Image (cartoon, rainbow, N blue to C red; front, side, top):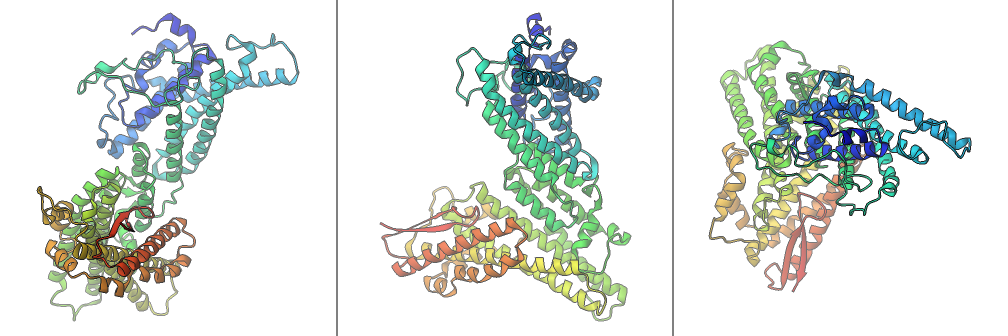
Length: 640
């Protein structure tokens, strides 16, 4: 491919460079959204023959930094293997992705930045001296009077590219060593992005064409960029027919990068806490912002490095910290235990799964339940085999071994139920349940949350027993704090239990007495729909002895008298005040608590109305909406 001389002649013009950099930024954003590199970033003809632009320092340095950034991002995404979700993301289709001179891209870019900064300072000095001519100033473009604004427009784009490259490279450093510096570069990126936005008015004023609508513009000025062809590499895509990809508009691309940078900033702010429960909580909270592929890949590579948490903590030590036993962190025998090794791998897989997109996450969580269940069963059988007949006559070492095995079993079962609860709630986020299926879903959630609380309480009891065994030894205040937080988590889970049970019973009453929320289908029965939603949980026996017939028996007995008598929603309002103090330093949990209170209050009022009117009244119309919480519905009661 030969670059036309007319294009090469253009490259020295500041207006051209500003337009070019705008297009490249937005084609870069389009690539991140799942399109191929060949049809987005590499639609720039200058990237195809980089050596031809070596005499044009601004363009050459910018393109080399861009290419180095793309190569680093591909490396991160490939390492995390999150590209399986959008498998075209990492394909290069034989395009020139790397060059030896790319390692020097920053030094060249810094030199160019300094040249333009010097030019900008000279422009400002000329303005301050109130000279009307710019004869002493060597202009970098055709209109000396516009030199200052063009320099500003170009500088913010160059600096954004430089700082974004630094963000990527700092976040790739092992053990999270570059996170603090990466945050500073994220702040610089956001600042340069705001300056890029401000330059839009100036660039628009200098374009001599009829401007497109903002939603269609791919450059700040509204002009078509020179040196780009969206169909340039369309025939390289052998698996797909040749077609052009629509690049994100100026406004959408700016919004994408703002969100991307905020997501990366959240990751950089992670405290690298080795407590697994905190890591799981952070990952779930992070997914609520619906991050794209790139930040999820960075999060996964931070969490799991060389088979260790943050590349520093063995997962056997992470597990041992969670067990309420005397300090066994670093114990070689514990680390080499067959079950601990298996559980460590399950935790690694769990963290990787939680970094995938929501649909993949739910499917993989359901499949991983079988592994958690298998290890749990094996642990239980081993415990019975080793200590079943000698529990009353154990030596100290045998007693310690039995306690470790017991706590390991409780911990495994607890996390199996945690995975199951995550699997069920993700179904609401993916809109997989119809209103006629809410009753069975909330019933299953009630059962799973109840079992999860049981296991958490067993762990707390074991922790208290360990503390009593220590007698008058110095108290570990960090462990006391951990127990307090576990107790608060149990109370929060109790709110979920009450919400699930209350909604399940309310729906069952409406089904029984008004025949609403029943969806008879010629294609499948209610039992078949039950198996379609919960088959993976049933195969893993999570929980045990639960089947469609258990649900049918429970829901068929539901009546309005019992529902009003127990008033689950009112019970929640008794629990939440005590949790506000516990979560005072955790704003996210306070928000969750407020949502729960709103759902409980609205459903309590709705239940009173249903009770007064009578659930069998033909004029009663009840619907459910997720106005206050993504997983727990609010009943809307009307009369026709």
